Image (tube, rainbow, N blue to C red; front, side):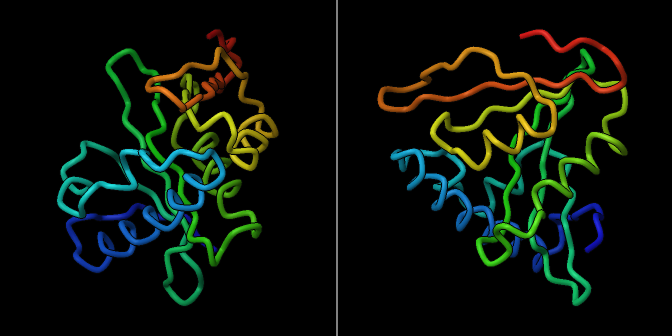
Length: 160
């Protein structure tokens, strides 16, 4: 498995990322009991229009197993927008591989923030295992509780 940039201008890459995202968010929707996740309803064009950077975990035969997308605001804080794994690749360390690579290679010295459904136990466990500090939970809409996490890379204290 290798980590490489993903070019969503490429039709096949964008279609694969869109398919994987929808499948992964459908699983999360079941886990958290909320099917209003915005990315679950996002069209391919809407996804491609987002101002995000993308990397993927690509298998030896060229299949995208998962991806990570983020935005980096001007203050140097990296906001992870989505971390998705194709359900066919669940429980094989793809999310850990993507996140470890990003923390070590892409975001050295940066504060990294992410949110996930508070009831998404696999995602919560992943972030905690990789040293993210859980902040306050919040509810952006009724019936949805989100968990916020932050991690400082390079020795800077993470504070929420």
